[in-house]
Length: 315
Image (cartoon, rainbow, N blue to C red; front, top):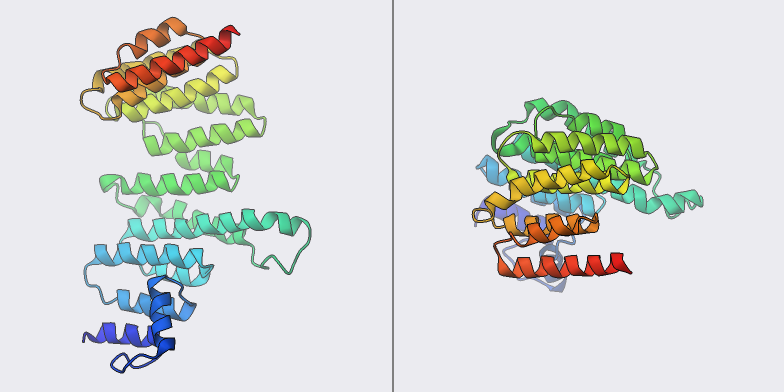
């Protein structure tokens, strides 16, 4: 038997793996299969994973172990495992996974903290620990290779974590860009939605306009651009910028319509544009756009949605 496997089994079973197993050992194996691990068991799995020579495979597996460890509230251990991941993308995305889980736990414990229930709420300040990790990720971004969108993906996940923590200015600064990048613009649009929920309408409109300009300029990633323009149009329309919203939808149609034959999402996106035209009261444009959808089922669905919206507005 491979020695690394033997040591892992010994740790999981707390017994010699070469002997006949009693019920306690069999129960331990069942827990292992169900991933109900104590910190000691996770450490043993971590040690076993280190025997994998291929850095990409080891990084991916350790990333999943970090995710599981964080879900089991083993945050300090999860952080140690994350820092042992050799590939930068997996390492920093694992740290963001921990930050995201910390923030989720912080939100869940907030009501109990508000009532002073110390017995129910851990003393650890989850948000503080999460923000330290996110600050580290931000500083490390330039060191993450841009190949295959690794850097953009880490920025995206960290940006969304910041939005969920309510750190909107920080998220905006992190995602600020002079050229179109769908990961950046999604963070900016999430910030805009969050500003609206706070009543900061002017700031949300500024972000929607910024994203609209970024998405309408350049080539490539046509469907991403179109969806960003739809999102921006909704924000602009809901807050009274009617013409700007219509312009965004027309630009979105310019990206989505021509790629329907090459992109499986082209017709779906075109349908979303048509329906949004109808929601904004542009019934003629809605029908015209819907009739240019190349997938019959998508076209029929869009026309049905337009009819419902038109009927509702006429009541």
